[in-house]
Image 1 (cartoon, rainbow, N blue to C red):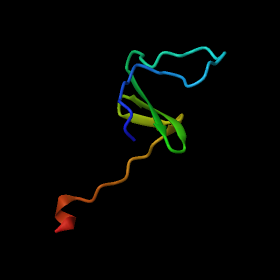
Image 2 (cartoon, rainbow, N blue to C red):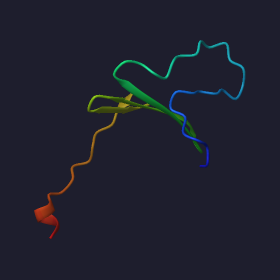
Image 3 (cartoon, rainbow, N blue to C red):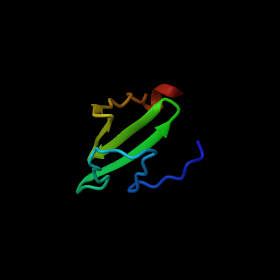
Image 4 (cartoon, one colour):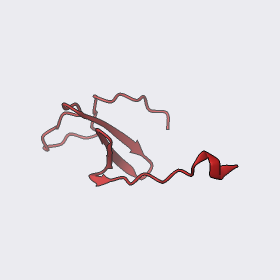
Length: 68
């Protein structure tokens, strides 16, 4: 993927009758990722991360002591 990362700019490929929504909002970071399998909306609200409206559950990291 070699597309530039422009977090507040959304360019549509085709004309659409759907109303465009702003990517910027107070307290919310939004990124639109265009990948091989289609577009993915990533939202960060405080400590919560959502992908396409679904909450992402972080993976538990092992303690540094248990890795030795």
